[in-house]
Length: 481
Ligand code: AMP
Ligand code: ZN
Image 1: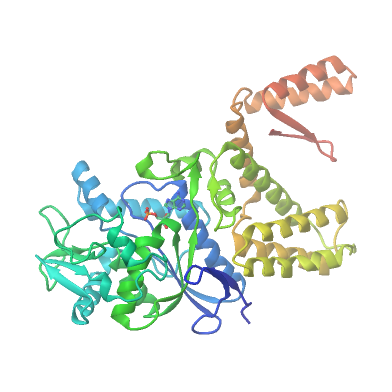
Image 2: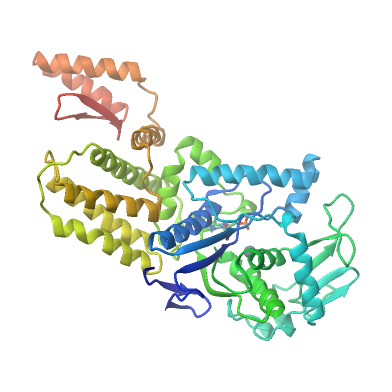
């Protein structure tokens, strides 16, 4: 049976028991990226949070239909494609593929459906038609606008009231609009823009309608949870609610979750501010496992800062996790059975933490304490079949729910080592052959009790940012500090 979950629902601004429409089943929608360029690590935070929610539902025994869209029809895409003198849809598809590659390197599970706007035109047009028929939308010069004052509950998610909007400075003046908050559902295409036939002539949709149409297509009129970055709450999500509830006549999403920003210094990381690190660049330099770890280690409702310290901490933790995974994979069944109750307690504890508003960081703490117990009780001792089963099941659960342990532990450890070298700026000052030779020389010096030479070699390693580990089996391994 599915485990009960509590979630901070932004509709009520309170933590609530999560009650899906059908017990044990979740319809989950997450707003995806606009594909006009490589995406940045701030977008990556939204992707990883969506993936964590998906995984946690699965780990807590829910059946999930997960929909994450691609905005492939948009002003920014058209602008960029025109600059590059390529077709807008072709340009957008190139970056859909690039984003999918990035998502893969972040260890994300595939979503159930990943619709694109360009594939959803009939559904979008149908919904705009319904809104006109029901009196929620009007036409001005081939443009269809949503009449915000007609939707009496407007502002129920963002807690913004229409009066304050009308007098606010944020609202632009547009002669076509009956009310300054009215927004575009469909606009006539200009020459050189992609366009689709509609009852209002050739045109293309406004931004907000796509998510209302896509969620209806794959999840129905009402579904259980909607996610996006906090910047999307207003106006995007408020407008989605207005469109869907007016068109369908029932509640749209029962629960709304928003991840906080990833900040760079004191500012949100965003393309327009120009302070971006792309996922692709970071992954090429350090590895997707490290980025995932950084993004998953802060609770989704807390702000997160980007810094070298955060990268360093992630490197150490990814290393600890994969050294542990490697040690466990080498364990054989023996007789030893100690620390049993501590070990058994970890999995239910992680379940409870994750069921408490998707608290990945506290679940991680429970897992670290579990690793400590295994290391303390089973150093050089082989666990009984019962204990080994508990250890493996606990790792399996943690892996499914967080995606923080990866299959090829040795490959991850190599990446961590290379990343540490790059971050310290000392990588490459000694190449692999020189390191091996120095380790050999040090071994000989020590065997000859030539402490002066051994010390000199130790200093050389220190200057190169390298630490040596004398292993119990007599071999020597090395890593960057
Ligand atoms: P966009 O392509 O701008 O619509 O963004 C895709 C997703 O990334 C949305 O859910 C945004 O809210 C989210 N996002 C954009 N910038 C950041 C940031 N700096 N930190 C966290 N999430 C972000
Ligand atoms: Zn959306």
